Length: 396
Image 1 (tube, rainbow, N blue to C red):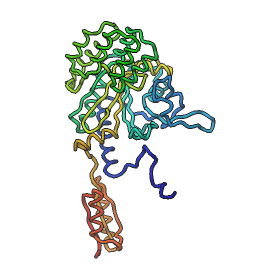
Image 2: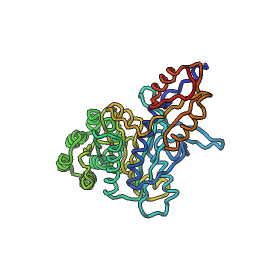
Image 3: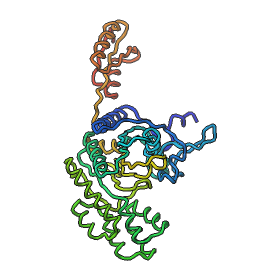
């Protein structure tokens, strides 16, 4: 039984040493990018009232939440997703603001995934939310922030794939699909199972032209191919969705970053609060998106504030995997130096430690254990990434 206590539960892990140092460095780069765009940091609680993440809000399904009760009998939940929490905060503290609010955050999110999915149940996220701006300019800014932040981490081989929820909704309206069919269709398209999606549509007796449009929607395309795809669309809502993407591309191009963009009209999200543009950033070395985001113009109304918003979330654990796989992990932190001393060298060693720390260097003072040798200390130093070790005193 005591042996089991040194292990962590499934889905969580300890982080220390170089891995933790790398995550802190990664966080620093992303924070600098957010700062440069004028985003102010906000911190929300690790748990909220359950209703903040309820089905009506459109976030993580209840079965995947970590739920518990407080002493008053209220149902609480560990946050699975920061966006509803930020929306709640914005509605509370910026209710009367009529100019855009830019907020950013960092922390851990908790999702009770199945052990078979191979995903962490606790993961570190950083994100940005632009609240109170419904323009295409705001969408373009969020994409540019993502691109600049990814570049700052050392990544250069990545793409940001952009979709539009209203494209899918427009087709569903035109085809007069009922809610059950739409829900089933959404599940299949979310995992890119277009054969399954076609089967659902055929079972619902949908016309062949919608099947053709659906097949093309699943292809990742360039801006020129997106413009060509527009010719296949006949409903106003879907056409406006494509026009919005074209406008966003034009704005990102002004920033000089449009080469990082591709388009996916079949993109959907498991979060139902998204209302317009959605996007995912992909790179080599990891099988899923490392950044996700989109527009959510109706979420804040559930907390009492009528305001459009767009945001993004950086998935730091997956980003670290990608950076490591590509051999471009950036470590900003300097290594710690060791000053090892005994009774004879204490005075000189402590004076040296004081001088080095005054220069803002990182130094550990270590009292010499005579059960160990100098070689032992040198070996431990090498294993722990210590760049400098010096001995003071009469040591054998």
